[in-house]
Image 1 (cartoon, rainbow, N blue to C red):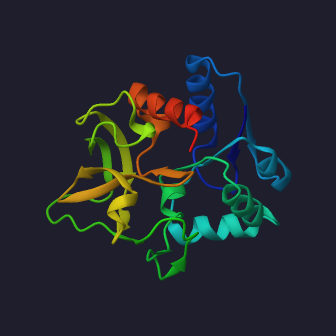
Image 2: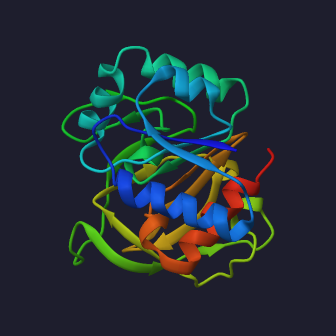
Image 3: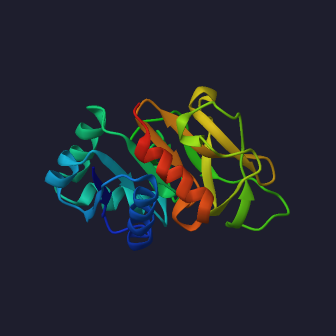
Length: 211
């Protein structure tokens, strides 16, 4: 299995790639994990992981600034290659982001990225929080139970999303979208690479997933 971790100048590339390799090893999957910005590598991949951290507009700008990268990503994912977005990588899947002005996203899931409304709570949400989801609803969540904790670091989140595309939420002054999926595209608002055993389980599920 060839797994491309997309390098566009944003994201915890080293920790994400290490977590993907560890999850593959634990699942007994022979995997070649490559951190890359080369469109040819993206097209040749059998799985694509898009990490991200920072502002939505900056991340989309970084993705678009690498010649041919955004086209290769779109074409490869459109062809059916499974995709996992992490943190801002998940946010980029939305129709647009409103952080520091409106910026178009990839449009792969419905909704826009807006500032979290959590009166009395600090932003960013930083730390461990519990997942709420319907067990058995999606292969990405196999082996997890509601209440499992994962690690978040964010001030913006998906709003006006489609209920059919929302796999899990967390509570931070109200429900916050934590996991989305549509077709062969999935994303986590939290950092699975920082979420210890639960995060590794999710990555392993992604590697086994056949949408």
